[in-house]
Amino acid sequence: MAPTQPEEQYLVIRGHAYDITKFKHPGGAHMLELGVGRDATVIFESAHLRIEHVSKILDTLPKFTVEEIEARGYDFGRKETSPTPSQSPLYERIRLRVIEEVLKPRGMATGPVSARGVPAWHFLAVIVTWLASAAWFVLRPSVASGLALGAALAWIGTGVQHTANHGGLSKNTKLEYLLGLLDDVAPGGSSIVWRYHHNVAHHAYCNDIELDPDAFSSFPLIRLDSSQKWRFYHRFQWIYANFLFCFMWFANQVQDLQILLSSSPDFYGVSFKGTSRSQIYLALFLKFVHVCWIILLPLYLHGFHAMVYPWITVFGFGGWLLAAMFIVSHNVDEVKYSNSIENKGDWCLQQIETSTSWGGAIGSFFSGGLNLQIEHHLFPCMAHNLYVDTQVIVKEECAKDGIQYNAYPTLLHNLVDHIKFLHMMGKPETAPIDNGKTSATTPLLN
Image 1: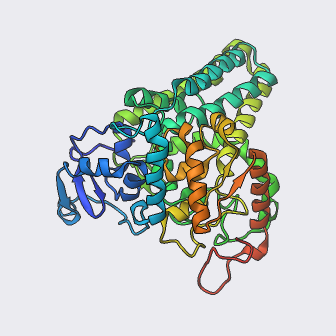
Image 2: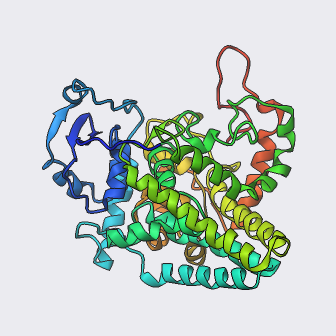
Image 3: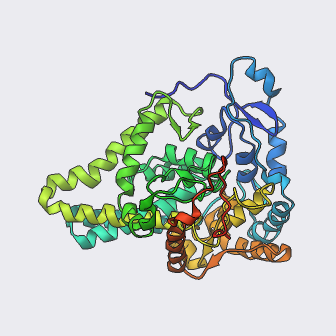
């Protein structure tokens, strides 16, 4: 049902294999395990803003050639061929300015986890809101309490678990790990599955139709790339997609259980090589806890008929809100899919041109920094309260190079463009040309 964690653990960074079996990672073991058994170059470089500091630490680890370790039967899987952050001059300029202009004034430019740690009141406000809404829902179930709880669960998903499972919520790694588990307990997702999906696949290869599961996992129901086969019902996806978002909770439960109960857990080809049996068992137990408080306890107290509409409301609205917050970030008319941009060799440019940002400081507080998606994709492990100031730097550097910075005043504006994008991708004109090859480049894409 779960993998047996190997006694020795290795990862590959910049063409060399490193033994991390005894390494105590400052960001926590739950973050280090994401790189086990794979080429973790992109993960390593994008996760550490002060790359000079962590490179010195990396040099202290036992170092081998990849061939030496593979000769022992250790399989690292796919070799990294994609561009990396360190190869981008644009990224280097932005990174150094962030250190000087955002971290140093706050005294965060030194220490083992300098760019991490959101003010506690940010996530405490979210947790208190969830607990109050959960109590209201369980004791007095109604459509109103269902709406409140649905919004609170989405807020846990964006304002707590998202940053925690990226490694940026708290400088106390044990506390951060526990806060990340609120994903399992509150909205009912699996923090393990989320960490592998988001950190290893989506962020490293944003909108890559082959490597980013967010670009293809919803197909064939929803078509998000012109290289995907067009089907007649895609004409209507701009209408039914938002309805499907309401089933996000149910889809997540099925997906999580399929992965966690597998003999070799993986998320669309991203294997969980660093995950132990005990972590899988904990994930299953916490999923049971979630079901107990949101389904079994209200059912026991009030009966099935009294709970039908409250459940429909909390799962439907909460799922729609959470899905809407995530999906608008990379699927609108303005963004360019990584398969279609000419400068695919620049990792930083790829992240900027395949993402959008909306709002400012207020939006950042209520979305856990998800609104500033461009900044988040450049520095995924940064404390999300720092993205507002980082945005100023990114905009200035984009303007210097004539790079389009995709931004909206509000979430609503971003969502409207997302619906337009779904409508565009539902047209048969965006189907790939039948010439033996598929291409994501069409006249309809910017």
